[in-house]
Image (tube, rainbow, N blue to C red; front, side, top):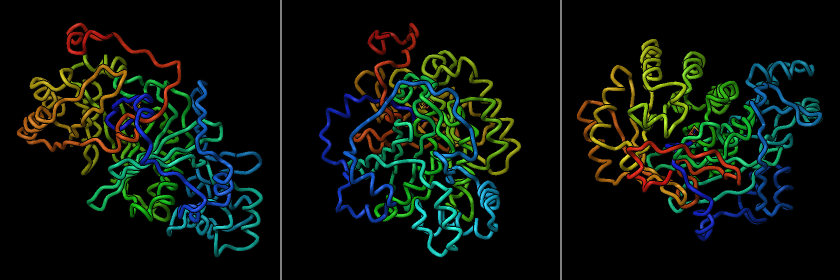
Length: 435
Ligand code: SF4
């Protein structure tokens, strides 16, 4: 689920000079932080090739332990998986824990056997022969004028994913991770949605985004404290791997993110949302964006399957069973579409009985999109109406939009794109009749 799901286009990206982009050079201080494999890669890579194959990879693998060639990829394993794997090679659980702490904890974030200081020599030899540590290859880091970083990673099949690191002056830095390459949900205001779904990410590819963000950027931006699953993709469409990756992130001996600071966002896949609330103690965000089925059916087609009533009643019932748990509703404001006084009143009614916070998000306009952002004064009025009803409501400013790192700007659609849906009659004037 792209944050706030605000679309943008490659045209915009290419029309801006890339003067703020950060290039990894041989003298970059980052190089000393990188694994030998990555250093080798960087020395031969132009860091510019892009490989967006228009392949549909179907429903992903959902595997826990995956092999790269003859070696086993360790990153996608939960700690119990890792312990079993280490044991199967004749080593004790204590050694599995030492390995785990070096991969995820103690500011080591090891990505190569050479970085595993303090481990038994035979154990390291076994790892060298049988284990692979990296699921992602760094392609590029771009820095926006507000300090937001967009990290591009190449996957083993050549596809590219994007991870965003958003520093905040209140001592909080958030990493926004992707869960799929592209997305099948086709939200009409989202750039990632234009790509369609290429494939799910594995648990390793998801978890390693958080590890790499810490490894690459902690020195620059300080401690990375929060994770949001709001990059490319609908996380709950890839629920097995997302729950596993979130489990890895909150492990107390590893990355140690607080479950309250790991937020998984969804466009509203109701059965998966229920499962998530039962199986994970991480936070949930629901991208709402409309107050009637008519509008939501159009801008978020998933609503045709899971209507607003069902979505909200499910949340009401499920959250009733959880203690001290609030869902975050995200609401991207589109001028003339979902920002009227009537919408504000309906929103108040819709969320009644659901412990929640509401984020009002400014839409980032882009060429090719027919939506416009709601004006700031109108957003403030809308916010005030909701706040007067006693709800917690926040306005969220766009971050990183000059490097296409903002809400819903991630990804790169190919020539074959998901279809735009018919604009309901009453909005055709509002959006200039383009449908
Ligand atoms: S199309 Fe996918 S990534 Fe974009 S907002 Fe919808 S669910 Fe999120």
